[in-house]
Length: 81
Length: 376
Image 1 (cartoon, rainbow over the protein chains, first blue to last red):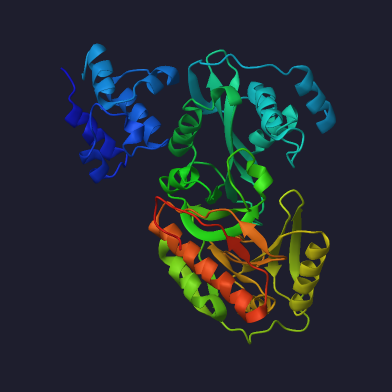
Image 2: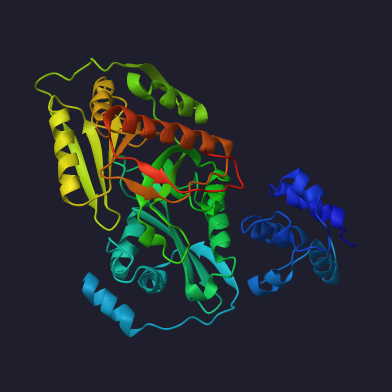
């Protein structure tokens, strides 16, 4: 089952990103230029790993810049269980 | 093995790590000790002030006995790319540990190694370490990363060590002036006790006290409550030469406290230090007296440190008073939370008061911008 950008936005709120930052996110824009910082980003990657049973090595994770990149990566690996 | 021999061995086996490997955080194993030593040598050279990180058998023994709880970030080939630790440091309370020494190999600075260690610590160490009642951290204030990570795991802001570290400690990070650190404390197992709130810093202590659910019998710490003539001051003094800081842990306030404090201030000036800190025992009825002595000596409020003394001396908690020994330039003081900003405002206001009332040297804050809650 494919994951949606909306679900990933909800996960960003779970890790503590402010709702107003999440609401304003452009799915095609780099997360680190839209209010996520160097703690939020790895925390989000860790939650994606845990939630979708993925293993992202750091180099690969750092190439996932936008919410759309994450959606594509998760769905490429089979989406959500 | 001596420290010198250990450092020589580390130098002889020095090598660059293979970059880009998968990294996992994990508990320390004895075989990790040389990798931890290699990290300290890479980052601090030979100057780190304690021996354990360099000498494998000392680090292994400290982890075995629980004086240090090291965690590592281990690469797929077994190399140690990062380390962090909870360890006994300045507090007289041996059950109050410091959390810090977070180091990452230069080849892995653009990885998530630091985050993975932090996540491991929050899931496996904080609140779970045997013999540890509380943890404290000193989060630098020229960026917000450490403060944010600490607050997320219940390290609460309770003091500001103004200008604690010299600019040279953060070379390459673009900071000008001495770097201040926010004192953040996490309490896992409280100990009931008396708390004599010094009259002169009553508002500050009472503003911070509700941060944790501490069981305290709160009483006024009157400035006039001098210790009896036969009571002796018990003061342990640590000199941090590189930082230019003197730290005095006052376990017992005695009749000669004023003379002892003045002597330490004079000697610290003679050493060329910039800052002196006094940790006073808030469980002592004479704490208010000692606080007033320090206030009149030009000290200002620094913080309230729960469990700093524990059962040592007249604990359990401490009041931090501090004094600059000459005027210094301060780097930016950024805060991540409103609670942290409140602490910073209180401390800086009292520093300014010490300058006005007693002509004490003060820190001069650089112009700053702050994305988080304002401290000014």
